Structures are given as structure tokens and as C-alpha cells.
Length: 221
Image (tube, rainbow, N blue to C red; front, side):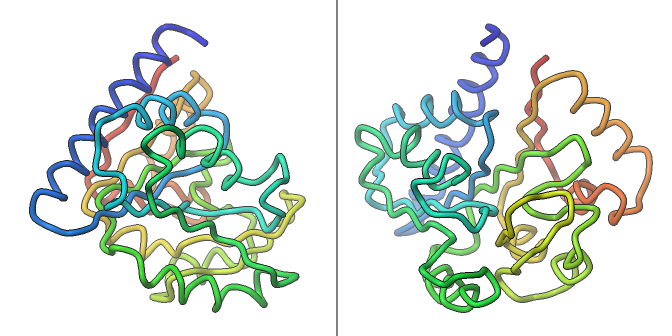
């Protein structure tokens, strides 16, 4: 991994540490919402090393593929292996899947558990795909309009371009966070972000749903 990506991960971990630390100085619990994929791995490892009162921190995911927790496609597995390590294992981690066969059948059960977390989130860390999606808000998703408009907590999502069904927090719930961060790497992602900043059709590039709120952008080549 390039030096700049490692530095970026460490800067991001420091910013998230500071945010959680500040919120915990005047509230009992704090919530961190993270994203999956390969980009956040060095950030997870850097954050896990921070001296936080982890037993007072809730962690969940912005979205998840509806797969078993041992699947290589599971974001929960990624969080367990790279963030819930050392002292950070004391955090209260809520995965976004349950035993139901489909996200449509399981979404209410997961939402009940998710409602108990320390909302509003202290920090939401978003990623972005080359198609401009963030969380599981995909341009070609049948449920995109619902996920962008609903006040429901979570939405079950089917997307033609993706092999597995998914579950995602609604744009509304993610918007309510105190702080929003976009963590991306590579020139291709920077080009997609530039395109997103130059237009306003959210359905074409769903990351635009978050460009209207203060968004800290962490990018490295």
C-alpha cells in the first residue's frame, strides 16, 4: 500500500478518534457507522489502536450484503477482523444481517436492534463506487427512490449489477449523523467525485445525496 494511503488512514483514524472522544465527554454512548470494502482496512486497524473507552461505543455498518457472517463478501467479517481487535473488541458491534433468508424478511428484525444504538451517529464514514453509489444506494437499484425518500431506518435492496441482495440504512438516517466523511482512494474515484460535484441528479450518482451536507473528503492516489 502506498505511503499516502497509509497516512490518509492514520489521519482519518485520528479525526474519528477526536470526534468520538469529544462526543463521549458529554454523552454516555457514541455511535460510529462504517463502510465495507478494501479501502477502509488500514483505517480500521489504525482506529483500533486508539485509546478510547470502547465499551461505550456502538459500531454498525452503512450497508451490508445479505450473506453469512463468515462469507468473504461480509462487511461484518471485515469489521471483526480489522477493527474489533485489541481493546476495540469491547465495542458493541451490530451486524446488519439476521437468520432470515432474505433482507426483505429480515429488515424489521434488524431495524429493531438498530434503533437501540446511540443515534444520531457521531460519525458516518461513507465509501463510493465507480458508479457513484454509496452505502447500498446504487443508480440501477429498484429501491433507490425509496432509500432516498423514506424515513424508515433500513431498506432491503435489489440491484441488477450486484450478485447479492443487500440491506442499507436510508439516506435520511445517514444524513442525521453529526459528521459525514467520504473515504476514497485512486484517480478514478476522484474523477467520479468531480463529476458528482458538477451536477445534481442524485439518481444518476447517488453520492450526490451527501454533497449537500458538510462532507469531509479523505482522498489519496
